[in-house]
Length: 298
Image (cartoon, rainbow, N blue to C red):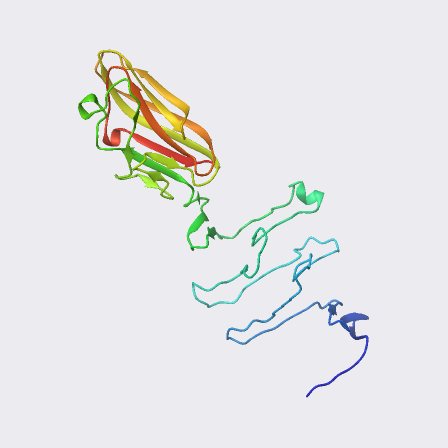
């Protein structure tokens, strides 16, 4: 059955105010003191309220919740108090982004437009309370940020690596002559070594920066020398020398540690590596006595 009523608008009144108004353009206005209450007791996959809009140029969004009066109460509350459910169920607030180009692709964006709020005296831009941790995953469902309830903060996909010296000692007996530059070789075997995104290549002895930023890069090496002379280690950024660790080994014939650490302002796809140069009978120890490492600071 179809019923048609031609009029400008239909109003439902209560408490001496317009409780609901149906306009001829299809709009619905709710007023009065009762607000909107939607009940739903079905236990299948339906929803209590579904709002769908095909309009593509609404600056206020599909759903706009606004409170114009002064209040000490939240503008919007999402509360779930029911028991039961499964551990894998999506509860609370679930935001999905799909479809056409979404611009910056921000699922949650918080903007303050009031100087009192922006002052920070009584405003939390984002807070999780009462035991809730925070986990962010990428499109491959891998965790990229994890904040636990005890305050531990981890970035499992943050670029970083540590590689140990190769199994070959650098010395004249092994074909490493003096007064010549040699690339210092490392590999990733051994307990405790890691390469978060597989950006260290043992075939080239280079760590390639997967993203731009400030990295802490360093190395620790154990060297030996007799008969005078020195050994010089260079931290190379592409083909440019950006840091060095110099050691005059003297004639004592003792093993000594040489290390360096510095912040590198890196561009994506550039790389760092280490080269050595010595003038006497120097050697560079193999294995766990040396390592090459780095980590993205931000």
